[in-house]
Image 1 (cartoon, rainbow, N blue to C red):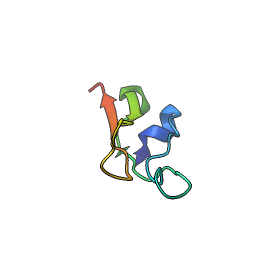
Image 2 (cartoon, rainbow, N blue to C red):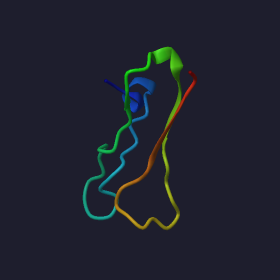
Image 3 (cartoon, rainbow, N blue to C red):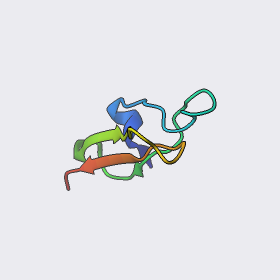
Image 4 (cartoon, rainbow, N blue to C red):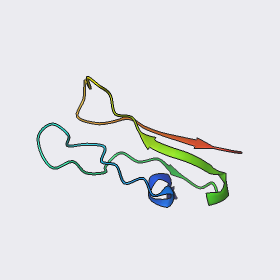
Length: 61
């Protein structure tokens, strides 16, 4: 399994934004090759309802 964010260089923190040091916890893993990975991002909401941030990845298959 490959961590898409790590491979594409996205190290944005996904948890800990409200009450401590933010760190990268939520991840997308895949067995697809690096050449199929198009993008990866953490969604930063203006008014989040959770301490976790959603993570989105796009693949070309």
